[in-house]
Image 1: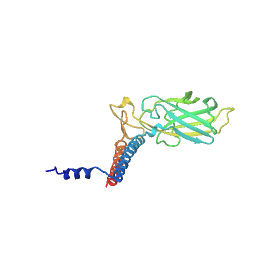
Image 2: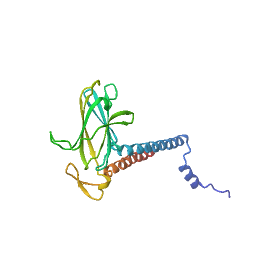
Image 3: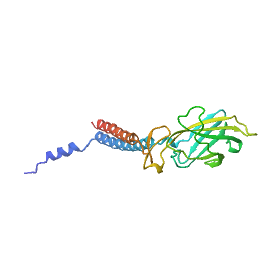
Image 4: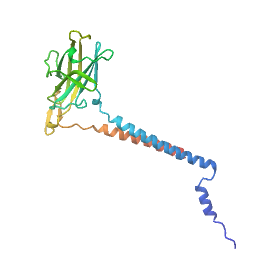
Length: 231
């Protein structure tokens, strides 16, 4: 007797392996689509996480008064801490970008604890000195030690010294001061009357959870799209 062909095995393989040109085309398209989706998903995940965790304090504060623009920066990273000396500097520029050094400006700096009443004397009046910072030379700067955590206002008033050409100005910068490292063993009341924990501040829960939830949401959408295209 001649051996009978194993039809069951043949039908099994023929049903699981695409043999037509059309089936192979769909299979290749699915592979390329999946690879592109994975790359896109990874790109979005790396994009969402840094954006969600950006610290707004890293941006310099900018104000404009008349024909003068003022940029405030406080070391370190615009994130001063109570009880620790911080260098603050003010980049003053005229319209057109020309820098106004302290030698051309009669500038006065006052620090107020928020909120404060009109006519109330300043909490601090730091002495301004010419400093070099980033691409600026001889601009007003001062060392400030904020006594407690809370919100402060830095008020800079200036008028031109004889020979300088710009209008008198006044800038008001709001600054948030965190608890200092020397206060991590006890609770303090900040300058606004709220009970705060001393020590370093941590990111809030939502700042950590937001990028994770965004990544999960993108993953679910992509998986659903892959499932729908497979059917």
